[in-house]
Length: 359
Image: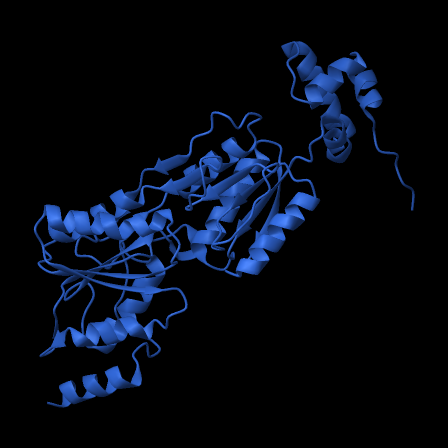
């Protein structure tokens, strides 16, 4: 097997008929005449020249690498976020070092240290470690969680999203609603979804209840809550806002097991904007987070040379989209209530339901 010597910058200059300095400027994104740039680009393509980003980084004291810390990529929201972050960084000639913490606080801190040792140019993190320490010398952009004035936080407008969910349920005819929340104890931006929902209920003078539990608590707790509000074959609520689409998915099965129809008997709205297969119908009626815009803002801030004028908090607008769990779903929605399901009720709740159905 014969190995062909990789073309150098000198080879590109000779092919294009320009000075070596002109090729260097084009490769490093510096302005040159349009005609010169065209010649250099054509020569690069013809010769198959590859930029040595490692050597380029050493010269500029940069690695052109950004570490991204997310809980996992199996959850559709985190997976979508990782995809768009990679896309936004790539468009800026940066590489992404992806780190999945699996909600492990210790692993989050290990990834921070690993990123520092590898001299990345910055870290973008969606983290949950309450004691997370980020070195001052490493640029850091946080998603959903406010640290301090030196760390920009990028988030959806969670308060408005919660209020929008309440207003939509009222608009669709609900007369008594509930909010179900399972989430972190940290004071992060998603916690504002509950405050926004309460505000929307108060504005429209509609009665509401809230069931809130922390991460790690079995989802069957919500089944028990619903059973406590189930009388004579009816639920006290005709509308429920779940603070994630995942929770809507689970609550829908609980209601099905109780003999209740979605959306005929109970309307459900989630939060995140998750789609089937990532691009088809929404899995439920939902408050959609602007994931591409979140990623774009994170990438833009992390590659900025100056950190002095960066914003402390950026809230990006959310939108509502129907997805089969509310009565405004048009003919374009093709969701069926005839689903197979596992049991999400505790044994006590199941016994109570059996007794009610037997009466």
